Image (cartoon, rainbow, N blue to C red; front, side, top):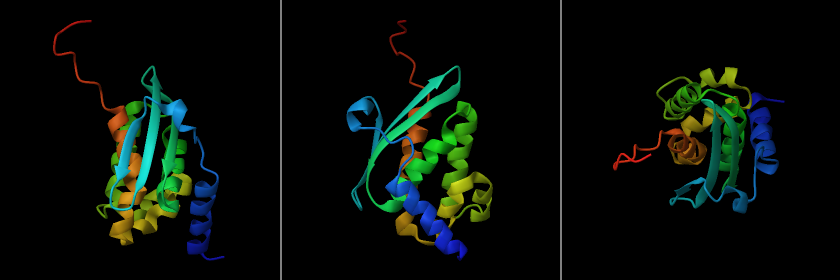
Length: 149
């Protein structure tokens, strides 16, 4: 089996059996991102305790690359300190934008299967949708402008 075939199987496995998938009603407070170009959408819920990501759950509707990327991302970020997760998100986005070599993903397990997406700019938005939602979810909430507690 060629590497390309293996990578395709990994993507299809995550699409057909997404990890950390949850019914949308369980994610009512989640961050929502949509790709209006193709109709992909994700609702993402990230829970943090003591500066560490304790849970990443999502509900997604979209193409195989979009759902598989969300599944792989949920596996990657769970258990990481927030700072490390943010660094990983930025690194993944740089790789898919072609700013870093896709070979860097080889150390990230199943995510290596998405390295080839960088060759197809129209698919980059699909693969990065969940990652943008995670970035937004992990940003500190703005300070209360009124100064209340």
